Length: 175
Image (cartoon, rainbow, N blue to C red; front, side, top):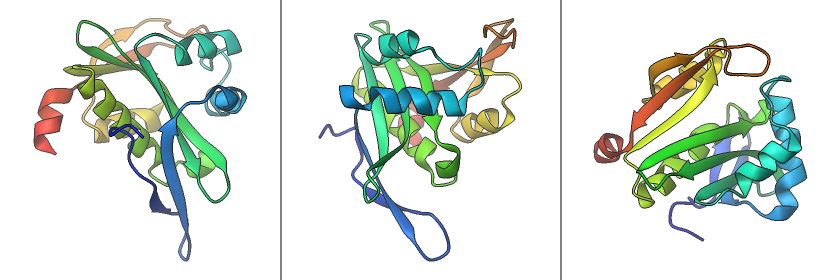
C-alpha cells in the first residue's frame, strides 16, 4: 500500500459503535459504484456522465482513492486528484455518500489526496465547487482552501463555481 494511503481507522458512526474505514487505490471493478455515488452526491448538470468519470479515473498523473467500510464491504466515497507537471494539484471530484458524511470520510480522502499531490511535487491544490454548495464551501474552508475567483456558468446547469486553492507546502509544515 502506498504511504499516502492511510491505514484503516475506526470512525464514530453513532453512540455505541464504530465503522472501520480503509482508504485504498481505485480498482476497475469499483467504477459502477463510484459513478452511482457521484450521481447520488450531485444534481444533474454537476454530476459526471459515465464517460467523463471514466476519463478522470484513468487520467495520466491522476489518483483515485476509495474509502471503504471494511466490515460491510461497502464503498462510502472517493476522490479523484490530478498532479500536473507544473506542480499544481487539482481535486477533480470528492464524493461521499450522504450517510457517511459525518464520519470524516471526506476529510480523510482529502488529506490522503493532498499527501499524494505533495509526493508528486505539487505546491498548490485547487478545485472548483458550486457557489451555492454551502456545506462544501464550509468543508473546504475548514481544510484551509481559499477563493481565487468565480467562474460564471461553470456547470452545465448554469450555476457559477468558485475556484478554491490551498498552499500544500505551508499546510505540510503546519501539521
